[in-house]
Length: 287
Ligand SMILES: [Zn+2]
Image 1: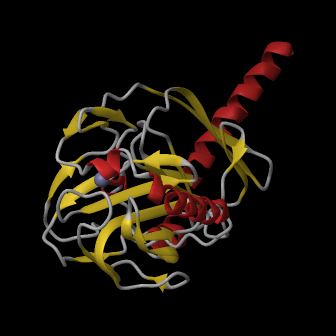
Image 2 (image 1 turned 30 degrees about the vertical axis):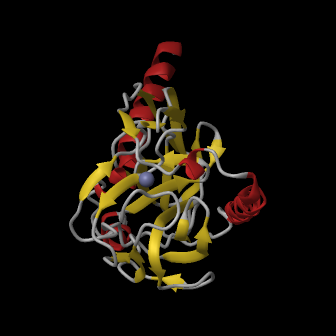
C-alpha cells in the first residue's frame, strides 16, 4: 500500500509538472550579467532565490544577474491553485577583459576639490532617482529591445576591468558605441525618463529611463538632450544626440543597463530574440 502511494505521488508530480511546464516560458541565457524575460499564466507568486519578482496580469516578468553573480539559483512560480514549478540552475564564473584607457584628463581621475560639492550633489540626485526604481509596475519593455544607435563599433565592453591612465578603477558598467557626434540616440524600449541630466561631471548630458519592474537604461555623454525628466518615451524615440560631455575622450555613446542594483550587460537585451510577447500572452498561453 505504501509503495502504491509513492507511485501515485510520483505519477501526480510528473503529470502536474508536465502540464504546468506549458505555462512558463523563459527567454535569455543564464549567465552572469544577463537579463532574462519570463511569461507565465495564473501565477500567484514568482520567486527568484526566495525573493518575489514583479509581474502583472500579463504574466510577464524579468530577472537578471550581476556581473559577478555565481553559483546556484532557484526560480519558483507558484500558481493560483498552489501548484508550482521550480527551476534550479548554476551560473559559472564569467571572465572579463581588461581595458586600459590613457588619454583621460587628470581632472576625471582625481577631481579637483572645487568640483567635489557638485559631484556629491549629482551623486545624491542619482541615488534619489534610483531609490524610486521598482515602483513603476508597468512592463514598458514588452515590445522588446533595439540598439540605441544605428551602426558604430563597440569600443568598450560590459564588465571590463578599467585601468584609466594606469589607475585601476571600477569595472565598466555598460558598452561604448563609437558613433559620430550628433548621431540620434533612441530609447532601447519604452519607459519613463527619470533623469534628463544637464552637464553632470562624469556623465555629461545624459538620460536615465525607468522601464518598469526595476529595469533601467542610461545613455551618457550627449551633445544635446531631446527629452526632459518625467517624459514618457516609446521604443525608438530620439532621446538625445551623441557627444563627448563629461568623462569621455571622444564622441561616443555609453549605454548602461541595470535591473534594480544589478549591473546588466546591454548586449544581453539585444540577444534576447523575443517573440511578440503580447502574442505569447494572447495565444500560446491561452487555455
Ligand atoms: Zn562607457
